[in-house]
Amino acid sequence: GVQFVVRGEAQQVVRSVGGWLNYTLDVTEGVFLLPRGISFATRLYNGVSPAPLLLARPGDRIRLRLRNRLGPDVASPNDGKGNGLRQANTTNLHLHGIYADAVSDDTFTRVSPGQEKLYEYLLHPQTGSSLLFYHPHADGSTWVQMY
Image (tube, rainbow, N blue to C red):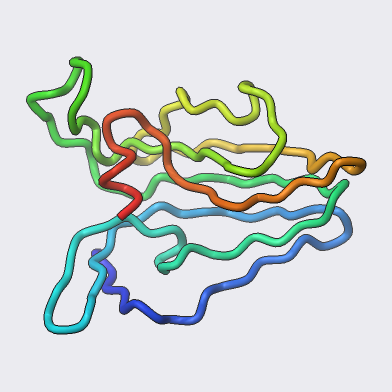
């Protein structure tokens, strides 16, 4: 079912333990409620907005399981074409602020509804890294999933 999220809820914090941050992100749909009766459909990680805050240290390993719990994709006039909305319920995960190669941070991966993908990263122990922002990056649906 669709979850209703009110802006201003406390953010969940997840910390690495013993050099590992193991966590599952479930992508679901929700309705974001704003003051004055304003609302909009959005995507949520683990049913909350803002998404959980992930904290790890240099040298830690990160293992994120992304599970797509969204409903089936609905055909769009833009399917198979260049720009425009398409496959709004297909997703993936992209990181900003981490030193990862294109294999680990593959923005072309597609995680369809009902599927999951395991992402694994090493926070470089000498240079350190900052995971400043994570978000979906599936071409054709990024903008509808981020807001």
